[in-house]
Length: 140
Image (cartoon, rainbow, N blue to C red; front, top):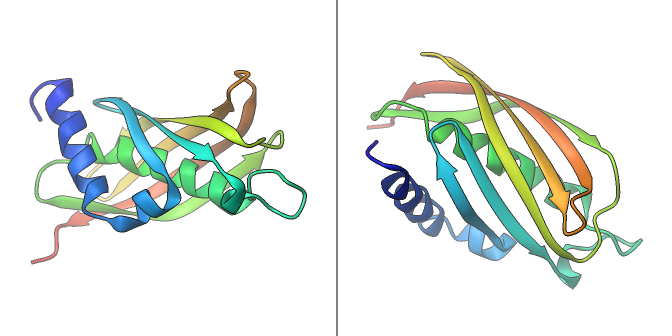
C-alpha cells in the first residue's frame, strides 16, 4: 500500500463510502500499517440515561479501530469482518472528544487479531477491546 498518506487516503475513502461513520461522527486521525487512530466527539445523541457515552458507541469506536487497523494490513483482494469483539469498560466517557487506537497483532490468510483502546480528553483510558476478525476474498 504505498506510504502512510496513501494508506490514510484509502481508509478515509472507505469510511466516506459508508454513511454510518458520518452518522456516528467517527473520523480517521492517522494511520500506518498495523495501527490507526480514530476519533469522535461524544455529543448529546451519543449519551445514555446517565449522561455518559453509551457503551454501544464506545464498542463501535473500538470495533472500528480494530477493523481499520486490520484493513491497513490486509492484502489487496481480501476483506475482513469481525468474528468476535471483547470489550472491557474501565471508566465512563463524558461528552467531548474521545480517541481510539487500534493495533494489529497478527494478520493471517483467514484470521486476524487486533486490540484497541479508547482514551478521553484527560488521557484517561475509558475502554479496551480485543478482536478476532475473519479474512476472506473480496466479493465478486
